[in-house]
Length: 342
Ligand code: DAH
Image (cartoon, rainbow, N blue to C red; front, side):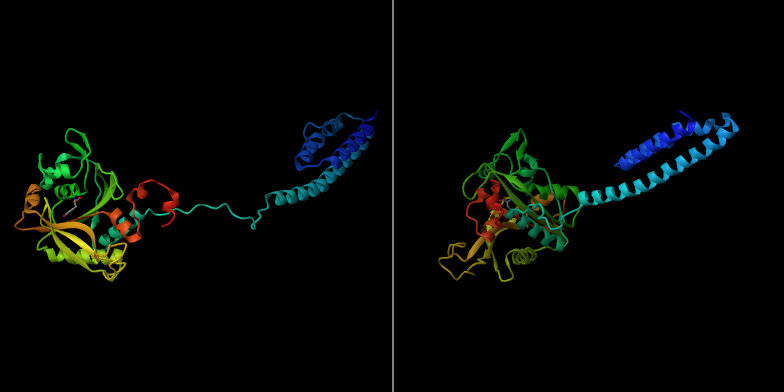
């Protein structure tokens, strides 16, 4: 076979390979195979210098023509195949915007959390700071520093979980009063939401529950400031129309101590058969009072210079009243059918 015949053969091999090349990658491989640096046609061109002058002319012309034809065939076939590949890709990657989405379940705030957020927002709006503290608390902060020394009957009343010698699960958020005052100088304006624990379980008591403590210490604070602050808070949480009343009470760390009732925001005290207030017209809401001078002394504040008020409320109870829920245990069972209602 002459060199020219071999060139013709390579050309027709290449053209039929191109014609059946059905992807841009396959066509690129064909280009390398027939026109690449070590392709046979390329070798032939490199060897032209060793040929006789007549052969040289003939082989030069036919090899160049063969390259051009293969090149042209590759170009047009590649264009065709690339267009088809592009279309296929578009078809495969198409997004059907009319398909229904995957539903993402919406979360709910727990009823207690809604009250906590509401109360905390209210006090932050008045300029109070939010402080949080440990749930495993020392006996000293939870009791002694609050006027409840070892052996005091109030310790039994609070159904305490004892963790270890000198450590309890806090039975109230009131120890945050002591922690806050020890950590700063007056004036103090804080609210302290958190979990608290007592050995108790029935429809209105759970071993874990929430409290929100409040403390203000400044020059010249009176029971009037306490009353005005709590009245504004009650209206913020339960509605503009609610009234409050203070009843005398007793706590070891306040003097005088009060309990605060809120007028029934369901019947306003007009319905003797009201399910929420049971006809009383009032709902017990929280404990409060003027900080006992002994407590101020305990933390190194001068009770001659400063006075303060404190209050402690149960947001779970408040949620029961606000959302008309009769069993506190439902709050902590994690049943979604219950939680979804809020
Ligand atoms: N810590 C009290 C309790 O759990 C509630 C309380 C009463 C908090 C009076 C106070 C307060 O700050 O002044 O029963």
